[in-house]
Each structure stands twice: as C-alpha cells, then as structure tokens.
Image 1: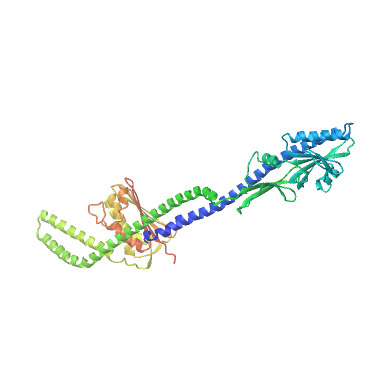
Image 2: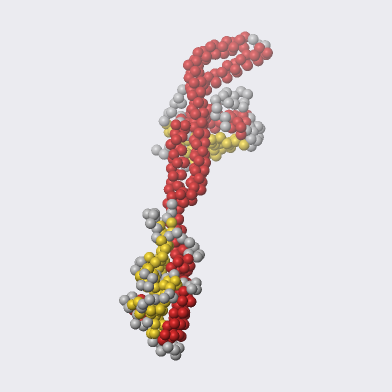
Length: 505
C-alpha cells in the first residue's frame, strides 16, 4: 500500500471528520448553554425590575394614603366647608410643587364630583363612570386605573385613587393623583438598564417600557408584582444568542481538537510510513535473495563441474607428493573447494522456492533424530547440553529435512558463540496454537546494533561464515507460516524461538 496516495483520505478520517464532529458537538452544547444563560439573565433582570417597581408602588401607596390621612384630619376639624376645601386645595398645590411620584393631585366628593386640584378647576368634573371611583367607594382601598383620559388635562394617564374617611369611617372624599410615569421608569431602571422591557397591567396593556420590534428573537421573562392592589407585571427581553457568541466559545475546543487530531494523524502516518518502509525493505531483501539464488541456480552446475575436477586432481596430487608442506597446501585447497560447494548449496536453497511437503510429523521426534549429533558436537567443544521436551504430541506440517536443517543451523551458531563449560539448552513446548522450539545458549551474545541485521543476506560476524544460515532458516519458517524471534543480551547469551503452527487435524 502506497501511503502517499492515501494521505488525503487518512487526513479526512483522522483530522477533518473528528474536528467537525467536535465543532458540531460543542456548537450544540454552547448554544444550549448560552440559551439557558440568556434566560437566567432575563429572569434575574426581570426580578430586579420587579423589586424596584414593588418598592416604587409601595412608596407611592404609602405617600398617597398619608396624604389621605392629612385630608381626613382637615375634614374632621369643626370649621366651615369652604375653609376645609381651601386647606385641602392648598395642600394639593404644595404637594404638586414638591418632587413626588405624582404629577397632579385632585380631590373629589363622595358623590363623584371632582372639584379641587393642585391646579385650578373651572367647573366640577363628574367621575362616577370611572371604574376606579366605584372600586374606591365600595372597597375603601387605594386602587390604580388603566390608562384613562384625564378629563381635566385631557391626556392619557394612570390614576391612583384612595378614600378619605372621617373619624366615624364614613367616606367624606376621594383623593386622586396622576402617576408620574417617568419617575416610575427611572426608579425601576436605577439598578440595571435594559433596552427592551415592558410594564403591563392585568389586561396586557403596556404602561411603560418598549417591546422589541426589530423581528429578532429574544428571551422574555415576566415577573408579577407582589402588591395585590397593583396587578401589574414586568417583562424583560434578553437578547437572543448569536452565532458569533457560540463560535467564540467553540474556538478553544476546536483548536484543541485540531492539535490533538493532527498529533494523532502524524503518529499514525509515522507508524504507517515506518511499516511501509520495513515492508519495502523486506521486499527488497527478498528480491535480492531471489536474484542471487536465481543467478546461483543457473550457474551452480557450471561451477560445480569444474570444482569436482579440481578437487579430484588435487586429491591425486596430494597422494603423489608426500612433502608435508605440499600436503598442507593441498589440504587448504580442498577445504576452500568444500566451502565453495557449501555456499553454492545455500544459494540453491535461496534461489528456488522451498518445497512444502504437506506431511504431518512430530517435531519432538525429528529433534530426537538429530539430537545425538548436536550432543557429539557440543562434547567436542566442551559445552554442556540440556533439553526439555514436552510429553504431549507436537504434530506440525513440515519436511523433516527442513526442520533438521533449521535445528542444526541454530545449534551450530550457538556452539560457535560459546566457550568451554557454557550451556546449550533445547526446549520444545506447546504455546497456544503453536509448537515452540527454543535454542538457548550462554555465549557472548549479539550486540544490539547487530541484532537488527542478522537476517540480512551475507551479514555475519564470523570469519568463516557465509551470512546465509539464518536467512535460510527464516525462509523455511516463513514457508510453514511460522515465525522466528531472536533475543540476545551481550555477555549473557542468545535465545532463538521458532514457532510452527500446531496441526489440529
């Protein structure tokens, strides 16, 4: 697989899609969160406005009822009516000139004739048809009207009315005041100023404030006033959540997701490139081995034929000359010819596909056949040999000669790496679905920098080695779908583990 051709797909799968998922997830979460925050903000400010308005209305009622008591006191005096009216009119005028929550004051008779005010009234005004007059007359409490037209000033107003009683609790008059709406608006906005809010009565008629009309979405929250005599409510409109607000909150999470996914992408890309490089390296080695083997196979017979003739003539010459020095030379020539033959045989194994003889054999039984040869070789080198074979059957599909070649190669390498009194250990055991062959020595070990090159053709640390023994072993093991693992610690020894699939048929 060519990683460079799939970089784009890999980037989309590991970076783009997860980042988009995080962006959508956080966008949805933050939109819901900000929506709740806006609602809480509207609720908080509506409650604040409601508290301020409650305070304003409470003070208004108190001041109006106090004024009613003052008017009642005047009415209870034993003086003429015209004197009472003059005093009340004077009181109303003085209050109108003082900063209060009312803009105008009036006084009406129990019969509903409004005839006194903070400003002169030319003729009595009949208010018996007003709802607030009937309610004050019957309930004897302070009441507030809806928006009505003030018949004195001829303007829309909110009117507050409270009864005036004598000592015998008889209704002797009605005190009327025009609510100062601007003062009320300034009072409720003294803590928090919101662009859109409304104060409405129980019929939904807007008294003060401004509702949004720009067509945008807002979060309204309504609070009812605590004063039962004022059935009004306050509604505050919080701004809706904008896309910019949501995106601003999502940016850190998306940036974090981008960083994490890019790191993950680079790690995966590095791993895949490393794996591809190893695969290409492995393929190059295989091609190199096959090329060498093909060349060797095509020339093996042509090389062996003259070598056979040379070896024969050297043997004859060694018999003709008895000089020890000449025989030494002849011996060297014959050893080198033998070595050339061994190299050619190894080439032939590499050059042609390993013959897979699908025959079932017991691995332990095969090892028992070659074990005496290994013991003899070890004894000649002064090395102890230990073995530990499982008593269970170890059936595998293999060629007996291949298994013998692997074991003899590994044993030979182990014996050449050990000194006298070292120990060679051979084990066979079953591990999961594999039969495991272990060849362990206590020799000099393999340096770490050389360990990764031991399966390369012609790589050897021995003076007389061909560098093909382990390559041939690995190729045979691969043929049987097995695996070979070599672990070594310099100065302590080497352990070779060979795994063959266990035959279950």
